[in-house]
Each structure stands twice: as structure tokens, then as C-alpha cells.
Length: 565
Image (tube, rainbow, N blue to C red; front, side, top):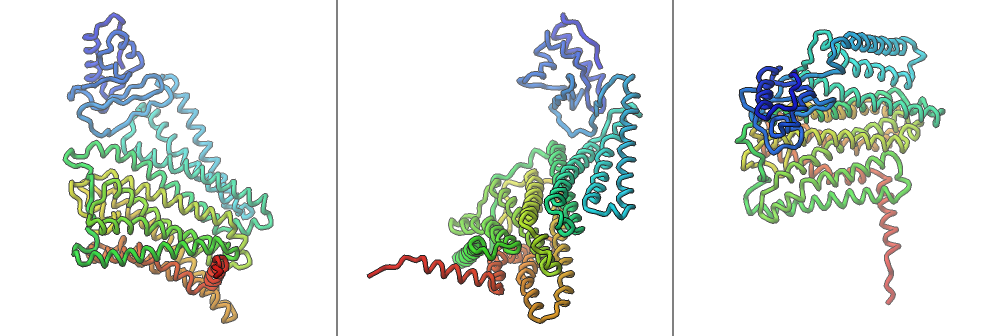
């Protein structure tokens, strides 16, 4: 720290003072400047300290400091030097720099930390050891206690260590990890408090159905979803900070591409009309077929059940999913152009990941719906109540939006060459990552982590649901009952097999066994064929849909105006 200077000092003297600061008060490429230095600005506005107001420019000699941190009062300003580099360490200023207060702060926070840990551990131990406390309310309370221990342990031990070692340093990696865990456990705290509020709502407003609604599987699902959303949110926040560090080290010859070129299926002019007509027809069938499903379900009161609510949402997602890719491909064929702008490519990739994830989660929710309907038929209307169905759809949207934001942000930070040729008919995520000129290893790690968590996880849920459904169907006495139960699952199983079979073939297959052409064909199956077939899959073997379809056309015929000759 520096001493106070007299107000009569000249700008030249002030400059020497600041030069002395840069050369003698450097701590790991950082400089600490006390609030007393603000007095310099009264007589030397053209000097370095004029940066406290918006300055025209600044040049810091390269031989002195890289990053300068000013601490006027309780605010922090960062001034970046001409030779900007990534920070390797940060300084945590804490509560006070007064030496006589450090012992008091240490004792106070150590005692509070020990009380927090021991108290919450006692709650976890009491809930786990007493069978009378094995209820949803205490299950959520024990989870909250665990999260509170983790949340406190994220910050307090490091602060105590810094006080004990008389150090304020935290490494860049340690700072990012601490921020990531802090964001994670804060999010979990918020979600668990919300879940506990819902638990109290059911217990007080629906006491007779409490044990049915708040069953162990639902409680576990709610906690698991809270973890998934919190992890995704903390990853997004941490990745944004991590990319700020690495953006500074990006070579200057790597630039953002302004345009990409979608090579499509074939460059032969003779095949373009055939491809255009084929995909235009499939797109129209997809849109009108799924719109018809939505119209039938919304207009027929007999179809206002949980299963058809999810089906109408799936139909809407299928329309959006197909509309993300096919219209642009048709436009390029019609205009004989393969260009898509950088912004258009990133936007297309974002919505593609979003709706693919929603498709995935809705198929999982529909599998859970079939599990409850077949394995717990007497409690079906209580468990799958309208509020819970809406919550399942909203959670699917929340997770999918977070995932697509993370993936999009990661790709948007990559650099590309001037001319990027994409061997696909849309901006496919994996292709974009592999075509990047800058380091894309973190993108691949996040991509495969998301594929494992948000792809394999829901698939495992679907597989588990049908492992429980199959014995229940076999246990039905009558053949007619078995056929009815099985017929409600065939459509869903067909859609799941078609979607997952092609998705896993594209994203989890190795490059050695999949060429660009085979990847395009597999992509067509789940981006075009599956959304087109879903209306047929769910209507041809469904008596309720066929009955609603006949009633719809009968009503439309009766409303047709008659022409009297």
C-alpha cells in the first residue's frame, strides 16, 4: 500500500508515484491501491488515477503490471493493460484488513460453521434412523440439510484458511470451482424450498390423497429434477466465466465466420427437384397431421386426459422441431443457394437442440404416464392430476432451455475459418464443433456429458417404466384386458424406438463407423420421418382418436352451408 501525498504535488510527481506503485506493490501480477490514492486526482487528472472516471485511453508499461485492481471503499474496478493475459490468481479482500479483527472474525465464523454442520448432520441422522420420519416432508428436509452443509462448506472453509494463513489468494481454477458449487447449491436450496411448499400444499389441501400423490417415486423424481436443473444452471454460469478467460488467449488470426455453407444431400442439379418435392410433401404432412392431432384433442372433451395432454404437446413440439430445419433447406434448394448466416446457423442449432430435448423428455413423461395407468390404475387420476401434468411439461421445458443455452453459448465462443462447408442440410451441433478452428475439446466434453445425462437418463427412465409395465400386463387375467393395456403402449414404443434408434446412431456412434452421408440419412429419420409418422402411429391404433376424428368430420359436414337451387 502507498502513503498519502500532499495536495500540492505536481502531475509529474504523481506519475512517479504511480510508477513506483506498479514496480513495488505487485502481488502476482496484481496491484492494490488504497482509497487514499484518490487524493491524487485533485491535482493530477491527466495521470493514471483519472481512470476512475471514464477515460479517453490508457497505456500501462508492459514491464510493470498486467492487471490492476482498485478497491475504493467496497467497490472493485479492473483496468486491463495493453498486453492483456488471463489471470492466474484472485485476491479475496474479506471483511476487514485490520489485524486486530482477524481473530474475532475467525472465531465467529468457525463457531457458526461448526454449528451449521453439526446441526444439519443431526437432522440427517435423526431422519434416517427413525422410521416414523420416513415421510416426504422429512425426506425433503434431510435433503435440504445436506445442501445447507454443502453450501456453507463452499465458502467458509476457504475464508477461514485465508485468515489462518494470513493470505488473500485464491487461484483462478479454485475461484471458478467455488462459484460453480455456490451457484449449484443456491439453486438446489431454492428448488427444495419450492418442493417443500408443494408438499405442504398437498398435505393440507388434499389430505386423503397425500400418500398417493407424494409417493416415494415422485419425491425422488422432484429431488432429481432439482439437481439436474441446478447443475445445468451452474454449468452455464461457470462456462460463461471460463470462456471469458480463454477468449483473451484466442489467436488474432481466428475470426468469427459471417456465413456458412450447407452442402445438403447432393449437388447434382437433376436431383434437386426430387429432393425439394419429397421434403416439401413430408413437411406438409407433418404439419397438418400434428395440427389435426392438436385440434382433435382440444375440441373433444373425452380426450382431455393426461395421456392426450402429453400427446398434444408432443405434436406441437414435432411441428416446431421439423420447422427448425426443413424450411431453410427448401429455401436453399429453391434459390439454388447453400448459404446460411452465422447468426442464422447458431439460432437454428439452438432451437434444434431445444426441441430435440423436449421430444426426449416428453417421450419419457409419456412412458411414466403409461406406467401409472397400467401399474396403478385406481390411483391414476389422483397421481396424474392436471397440475402435476403441467409441472412435468414445464420442467421438461426448463431443462431443455438450459441445455440448449449451454450448448449454444459454447459454440458461439468458438472461432471458424472464413469459408466453412457443413456436410449437412442443417447446422448440426456435432458438425459445427468439429469444424471449429479454435480449441473445441471443452465443447465435446459438454456435448457428450449432456448426451449422457439428458439422453441416456430419460432412456433409462423409459426402459425402467416398461420393465414394470410388462409384468403388470402379464398379470392381467382376461385376454381382452391384456390387449387393451398392450395397445396403449405399442404406439409409444414405436415412437421411442424410432427416435432413440436414430438419435443414438448419430450422436453416440464413432466417426470410424459413420460417414457424413450415413449421418445425414440417420438425421432425416429422427428430424423428418419420426415427426411425420407420429400422427399415424398414435391414431391408427387408437380408438379414441379415430372416434374423435369421425366426430370432427361429421360436425364439419353438418356445419357446411347448403346451397338451395
